[in-house]
Length: 158
View 1 (cartoon, rainbow, N blue to C red):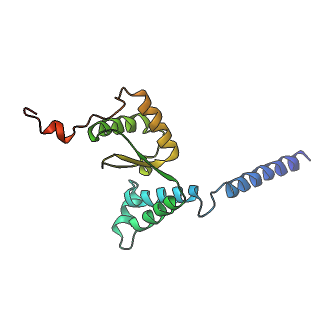
View 2 (cartoon, helix red, strand yellow; view 1 turned 120 degrees about the horizontal axis):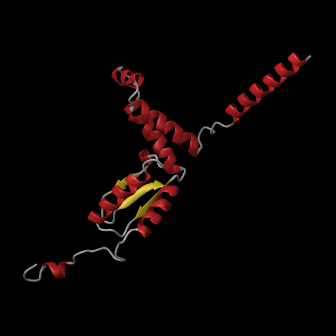
């Protein structure tokens, strides 16, 4: 009798585990699903595993097309936020590098882009932008970026 109770209990646990595994997957088309598929495509293209290296050699292997499709889907779904900084280009480079070093274990940097235009634009998920703002507030930066206007540059001795 006890044997049957143990077998039934084990079957219920296994059945419950299978249900959780099936129903906890992200829905196709959701932000989480596109995130996961982008990382999967990224690892196929740039991965270090021997299987990934072989797939790169084989013609018709994975390309950037799949990565681009998932990236565009994430953009359409509003996953990324553009954050324009008031920092000069030099200040921004130092701050972004320090931020990356401080957060490399918490954020997947494949989802963070920096456009070095004026002003510098950080494009990333909302949680990264919020953390970047907190990081900036902790830094000793002037309220306004140091810039040089044309009038100062035309003065003698400049």
